[in-house]
Image 1: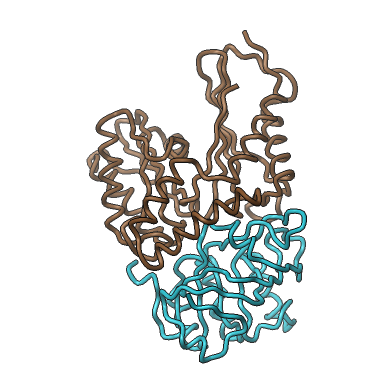
Image 2 (image 1 turned 90 degrees about the vertical axis):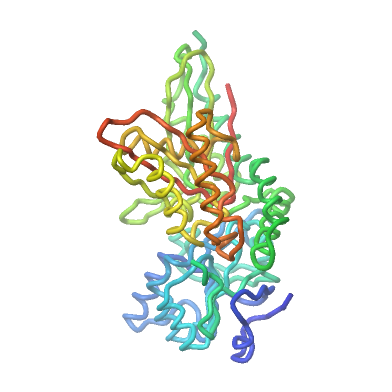
Amino acid sequence: MKKLTLPLSESQIEALHAGDCVLLSGTVYTARDCAHKRFFEYMDAGKPLPFPLKGAFIYYAGPCPAPEGKASGSCGPTTSARMNAYAPRLLDAGLGGMIGKGEMSEEVAAALVRNRAVYFAAIGGAGAFYGNAVKKSDLLAFPDLMSEAVYRFEIEDFPLVVAADCHGKSVYAKE
Amino acid sequence: MRIIPTEEIENCVCRLARKACIRLTDPCRAALEEACARETGAAEFALRTVLENEKIAAREQMPVCQDTGMSCVLIELGQDVLLTGAPLRDAVDEGVRRAYREGRFRKSICDPLTRVNTGDNTPAHLHVEPVAGENVKITFLPKGFGSENMSRLVMLTPAEGTAGVIRTIVESVKLAGSRPCPPVVVGVGIGGSFDSCAFLAKKALTRPLGSANARADVAAIEREALEKINALGIGAQGFGGVTTALSVACEIAPTHIAGLPVAVNMQCHCVRCEEEVL
């Protein structure tokens, strides 16, 4: 099993191929539908996002509240396709990649190729596994969105599958 | 006549929700173990992670999935029961409110337009069915929306018949693809009206996974649809393989001479459902 730590270099991203299983560690930022909508409002207004986009990874997820003494509650991926409308522009602005679940659009696949980025699939329904692998969590922005707020996570050995790589290949080719 | 204070119903809903969100049903776990043994590559990796996940959830007392769902509460209310105390709707919502706060479950219910969260996972989706006797059966189904979003309802013509029903089920799973967290469980409503058909599909999801409909022709639809779905090649999480669905459950009701409604309610592999009889 390949172990990787964020941020990823261009050569590390190029070495990833659809279907590869990896364990990923490092810093990721959570964001779902509502947070993405606000990112776009910020970008349209020329305001900086809550975190530097260059090389960053967004985790499409909204955690359960953290139990006493833990960094996060259950926190598996949400369906990425809902973010099809947002991902290309963020990738063009420097986003390093995304973590979510399920197939994304052809526009997203093209943006991954264009920007040498990668889309990882986490295993949907494994919320306790991923929540337990979050070692540190900071609320960065939009607390009014509750579980949909933007959190900065330090993750350790997230089990992931390369869903769409920077060579234009997808693990979902059979669909 | 049996008197039941609605506080007992509140406590029961709370108990069922606390239990349901942190474990898979036994038949679901068994089906996932079987699937894991027959799959390879990324699909096996996904199923292994899901099975390990439930062990972590049990050990840490954390929800198996962060989407602790819309709280679907199905009550079969014996007509010889007299309910006393707070209104039933309030008691059920209070049970949900307490469970989601105490269990530290995610609150996922919001206004459909403003998207403002209600903050406590209420209101529950409450369905009360009057039945004979003096018992109250409560079923709690925390319904995740990754799969709910992939559900469909189609008004077929009577001419399309059984073949049309099977085609609709298989086509729905194909359209959903990798998005509803396959291997899925497919709840199907056949007949009734537009709205009651959708509820039949939801009710089908509360049946023990893998159980067959008592009517032979309906059970045959379940078997044939499952076989065709598992030939689609979508597989666990969409990673390919022969396990796209764990089960198809159909519920049927008489319909109008002019129609053949079919509802397909998609459920992810994370089947959580608990029931109790008061």
